[in-house]
Image (cartoon, one colour):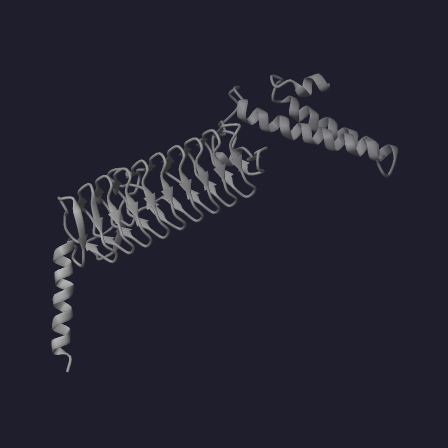
Length: 310
């Protein structure tokens, strides 16, 4: 009997025979003694456990035509990852060197590369890809996205959620625009705590290689950011913005939607970009203008305010 139990190619209906056998043995033990001996109880528990395991295996490997085949994630139980104690789905592809801490969960068809670290409370959504040597902090949510190699994603980051896109219908109601594409994070990218990067609607949201993003930054849907850019804390990039390489956004910089920013542009803190910037250089102000012009504006405003003040 033990050989039949351990054989994965045994017929599926064999598990139901084990269930009948367990029920028969339990009833027989009641006839013999009002209280089953400890060894019989243990045997029944083991047999029931083997039956459950065999039924789970049969539901995955079943090939005979006896009804609808389960293919939903709810039909298969998640398992505990041996390295860290997190939970993963059997259809996820996880490198043996990956660390998934207790409280983290990896959903179906996700792919985790070598030496990936996933912190407690993190959720790796269905189909998400994480490259090798990437470190993911606590309570991170990844969905509809791919993350490159050697990235650092700090606590509370959300990547791949729907963007903020709506239109007004003929009755004045706000109707949601479909958000069906992905977010793609390059290699060696660092993303600060509680930053949000939305998935695309008409093109993928892209963060280029070696780009560094500070805490509390918002990157809207369809945004494309080049390589080696730097976005400081509380910067906000609206949807469908295109940024070149080596762009620097100071703290609390705002960029309106559908704006293009050339490579090697630096924006002073609290600036607001309202139109395209086509030439490299330093810019500042609201609206953002070349830095020397902005400084003159600030100086003139200061002189005027002093003259008006009694």
